[in-house]
Length: 510
Image (tube, one colour):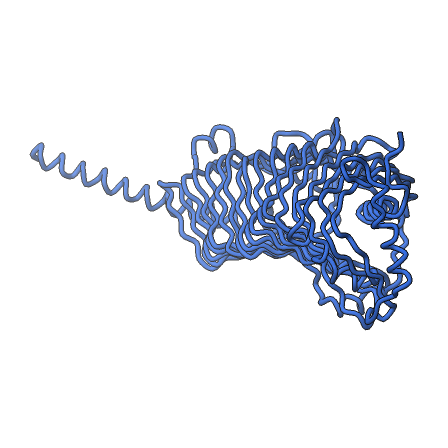
């Protein structure tokens, strides 16, 4: 046989051998993958799928219309497709490590049903599980739904996109808060919802998160009922909330556990354009439970919290109380709020400090400096503030509906200092005003109580009780009502300060 013909036959034979080996290898790979997907190891997860496609040479596996759930039924997952690419055969043969170059999951729906975790079984499962590494995990168009039947709360995310590198299971870190190790990641989602309680819920329009930064857009914390319906639902006072924030930004954040205790550290939290409306129905019975001051509230948190800086820009707060059933409540508002809060912590060191500027009733520039130490078990605090060029008529709708009074004139300058603790506080105030006059209304708010009005203004207009700079001075002491909030405590101090400054001795003690 000629040499060329022998070579041709040899080439054809080798080609046929390669094709045969390829067919056998592909068949063997199909059978192996199918056997693995139906093995005892995967049976507890009730894995189901409609289509299976593999490529032995590229190490690719593709499942379509796939679904699975964990043995305890806490997690249920269904996806249009799950594609595994680049199985590393050498690592599998050498070390029995399962390494994939890429896993791509299309349109998964993830359902989570929280249950109490059996720690013993969890650790056993972890120790017997093979090591799996995914160099790149991509999830597109996913959705997440949590339903907690124990407290009837739910959470959801839509249009999730996840990109994670170097995902390894199980984690090598002992007592880790998460069962996997990972490198960089980027997570985005739309239309988030979380039931914060039976009465309030959190929503947001868009979320993005990576190892360094995070953002929430169109964030809202709102009561789940209208004002009227909320009053029907509760047996005692409970504020109606409507908080909207254009954007929440997290910079330089980290979360996890250390020595079995959760922690959350954040370099900076930015709240852009928060709008906060608070309504209180005072016709309901009081909530007489003890209200923690912020020292204790932070100290009692079940985690180590450290936020280096919180900044608030272009904010607004409106507060109204329903005092009488036949009198419509009016707002007390602070606008153009800018604030910086430093060293917010639960178990750290040093004082928490807040500097706040705003406009009272949209006209009087207002400034507040507030500091306290969460470690101080007496819950001491210090507040200093000032108000200037306040056109007092702007607050009349609130005063008329809440206090049965009206006022006119200008507060040119007002300064106050308050220091206090869990039980009591004391402070001083000085005030300069121009053409200031009170009108005390009758109980029905439709007429003037001329006697009380004359008495109040007799003290108010006594110019002999001002110092050389035109200021009246006052001192005050307040006993805290421990079933009321810190801001009620602050208001009582300001109220006592105003009364003593305007109707008391007037001049500063030597």
